[in-house]
Amino acid sequence: MSSSIQSKLEILADAAKYDASCASSGAPKRDSRGTKGMGSTTGAGICHSYTPDGRCVSLLKILLTNSCIFDCAYCINRRSSNVRRARFTVDEVVTLTLEFYKRNYIEGLFLSSGIIRDADYTMEQMVEVARKLREEHHFRGYIHLKAIPEASQELTAQAGRYADRLSINIELPTEKGLKAFAPEKRTSTIRTTMAGLKLRIDEVKAEKRAPKFSPSGQSTQMIVGADGANDATIISTSASLYASYGLRRIYYSAFSPIPDASKTLPLAAAPLLREHRLYQADWLMRYYGFAPEEITEGDASGMLDLTIDPKLSWALRNRAKFPVDINAADRDVLLRVPGLGARTVDRLIDARRHRTLRLADIMRLTSGARRARPFIITPDHRPVQDLDSTVLHARFAPKPVQMNLFG
Image 1 (cartoon, one colour):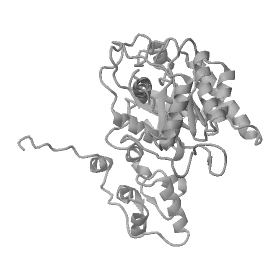
Image 2: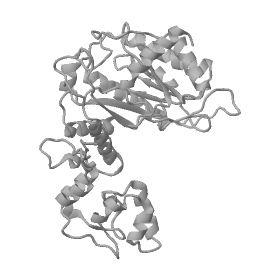
Image 3: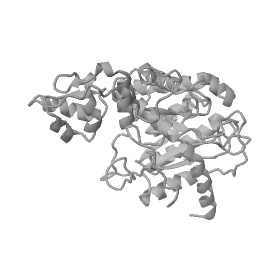
Image 4: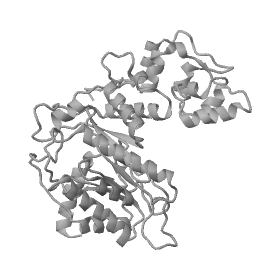
């Protein structure tokens, strides 16, 4: 690798770290064994690596350029930012992707970009990277392109023919926040492009013989803690996005202060734990049947409790609904029991068809049995009745670390 490419890679890989939406889940299986082509989305030779906070880093995750004509206050790459700038050519990105794959560093490519010249020109460059990989080099690995809302529908349609997934950043949870911090962007433009993607994805699914179009769907990302929106607002916005555009996933990115930032932005970073709680709340909506308003009800601030997870928090606010009988409760009820995940609930339901489950059975089926005990009944277990919400909150909240100042 030349020193010039190495220098660009250092700048543009670092600039891409602020985009959290890089997971490769949901890609269709493609295997090049026995066929002409390179790469695979599954199987041997693909190395998935995750950072401690859960972000997937198994893709070559870079920007085409960190130069941008926009001046979004929260973005390190904004027009007025005093950062080192760099730009890859199309062929440089193609070569890097192929070389990194051959070395087994990655399973595919996540490509985003600042806006250069205009949205259409930038999108053309990104589409050309994907086209060359697919058509000229027969690359069968995963490709995720960050679509540009302001680009033409024709270019977005081309991108969907080559990419496994397209994503469009909603940026901030409220239109008010976007107007304040990114006045050159429009929520209406972002949502219109999302709607167009959904329509095209649905059309292709309905026509089984149609060429594939973004087969693992679309996703988005929103910044948490930059514009003052509380968790209730963020969760409500997320629910609306899932319902309206069939998103596969929403990524939450805790705001981090940037150099020479606007005075209107917070001085401190948003807690990563807040980001984590929002992911847990997101999971409750998508897989556990929780309505968005249930998750943050009871707190006038509209903020999630950082000391315990949102499912346990809901259960403590609704003690009258517990305990539930493990051997009789419906699946929807069991899904709301702290400590019981969806897979565990399905195993419980299957097991109780054959025998009456006792506490020891629950403990064998899940490591979350300790958390579930105050909320369930079995023939040999009934929780102590005086364990009120305050007691349980204290029991399950993490204990403060005691520091020995004297060695």
